[in-house]
Image 1 (cartoon, rainbow, N blue to C red):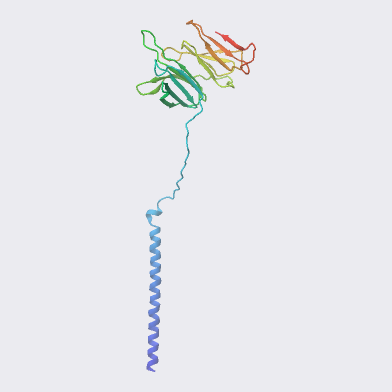
Image 2: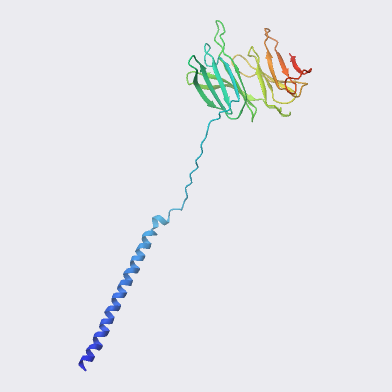
Length: 255
């Protein structure tokens, strides 16, 4: 009887100790899980916004197609330059015995629609006349007269202006332009049936512009004729449809 009572007392005690050990293990596991969750969801990391980073990779090539080019004295009075227009970029080279020597490269605001050079020249005992570069953009019809600054090796804007008109139909074959041989006036063919003349002085300042009517509506090209007169200039206009038809509109000259 005493042995039976001993077993009754021992078994519950043994069961209770086993239950306590299981409870302690479960408590330790819950505590470790809570600690792990607190570690991953700390206030410093949860307060930061979730952002995604994207990379935009592009290869930007400079324009390579040549729109306009001209040769003459621009940066030097004794040495000639090659000036090339590529879309909205202007590249100036110096002609040397070894080849082309780069001088400068710059951009303009807009696609270049016309590029003409008014060469620099010596003016006897007076101050030499520097070269002027006339640039007209296609999108805004803006004209600028540029000069070369040797001290900074940059282009400087001498004068600029808007050459657009309120009325008129833009030409289909693209803008045309030229400068007379005496460097006195700029002629632009922007609209059908009109030629705009823009006089300018020796310093490159633009004067009052005016329009002249044309009977020809399809002008392919025009150029100033050489003239020895200081008060008269002539222009030859090619207004044939393909430039090689023999008709009355081919090679008209007007004063």
